[in-house]
Image (cartoon, rainbow, N blue to C red; front, side, top):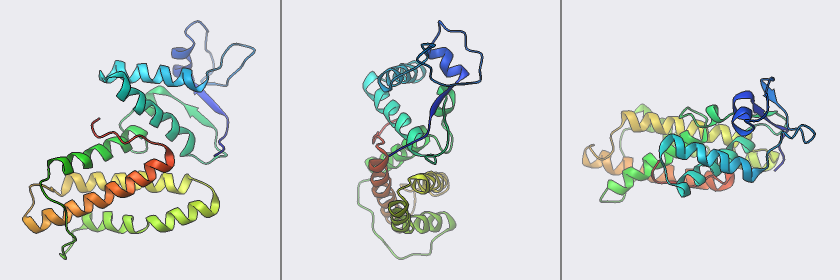
Length: 212
């Protein structure tokens, strides 16, 4: 998978190259100036930053860092200039790898606490349940289009949108506290969401982290 030139924002460049005076807001790699970073160096720096901010162990922080780097390189149009910024990529905001990983962890936490499997019980769906189910049904079409175009942008947008509606569902539709039929249906919906998320995570190389 090809991508455009990767640049650093000023703040990130200053973290990676503390001995250099960084004047430009966008920093291009320059071997002549000694401003360049390979993937291993970036991974190590980002891992340390995650440990510092969240007090995670090094192994978990590295998995998160790997996901963040892969997501930032793969989610955008291959012809778009990539600007890598530590502050932006580590935010819990819609569209970041942290947001995606957290959504997955939320769903896994529900299943961990549940004592039974979900069931596709016929019931009248509320708006949030419909939104999740309708988006899940679009997955095969999105995959087919991504394969035809050899472009991951549409799949990335789909994943972000799916995580958004999942989080709305999570906030507005209690699962374990619902009535028995509603609980079983919502557990079934959670299981479907996890299955699709895991498939897309595999495509993008994102780590499946159950607690974040």
